[in-house]
Length: 189
Image (tube, rainbow, N blue to C red; front, side, top):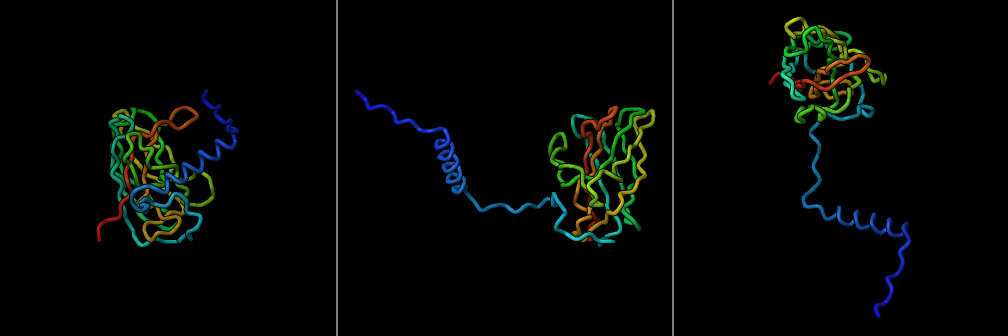
């Protein structure tokens, strides 16, 4: 006759599983990697009135199986960063949203790697840099908007260089899928 299996209380079993997971994670091969993406939160960094650069550019590439692409020039000015450019491949006569997002990473097929909306003003609200752009009959939209309180370069909390510019399809009462993404890049020195 085999001895009975001892009963293990569910809470004790959960504690043992947690301990085992912690021990196994300590066995990971290689040192921890430092992140090269722009910081997801800017609460610890001070905000700046101006950055170290006057201009930047974002070349937008298709996301979410669309044909959307474009080029947006960014120019620092008093009060924020001016966006100007053209986006094509949009739904004719359709309204879309153009926003700065937290991370300069457009590698995901649906541009989700760019993270959430980036709040350059620090007010906790979506304002500026999220204006609607409306495509003409050919599916082309002209961009002319301001990202208030943003700067280019210098690494301040409100610096948008190195972050992503994302075009989102607009639906009635909500924002749709991410249809294009481009990293905001400063010119080479």
